[in-house]
Image (tube, rainbow, N blue to C red; front, side, top):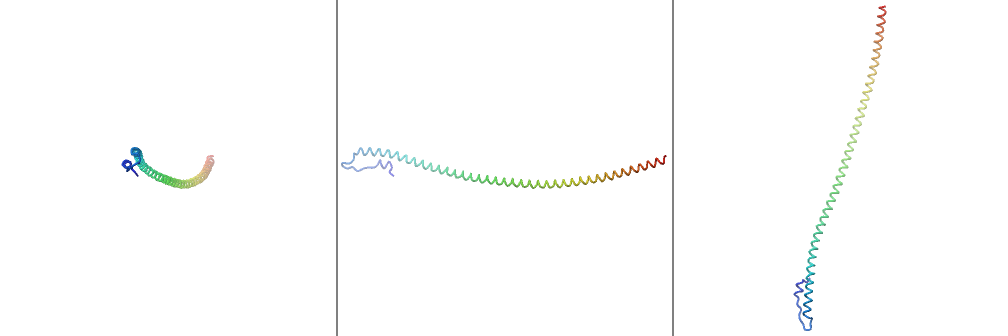
Length: 154
């Protein structure tokens, strides 16, 4: 690619009946100035393009990192959720087992209390019957003694 300096330093051979030297010089000067401006602009654009390329690469790297972080967060979240569900299921199952054990123990205690109640009731009824019989016997004995004492006194 030609540089503005190449255009500025170009020399043409002069020939008879050739182009007007002044017009050629003016044209080359204008061409060199325009070309120099375009050349500088092109270099600036290349620098900006490189800078944008670096920026894009940086943002692409950040995007990749964020995507990776998001995937890790999703995986971690799913793992935490799964672990929590497993723990909850274990707690529920343990609670159900303990509830069954408590209910079974309560039924055993209830049966034992009912047995003790029935046994106490039987003992009470037996005692009551024996006591009533004793009272009846004592009453009859007392009546007989009173009758005997009335006969002797009388």
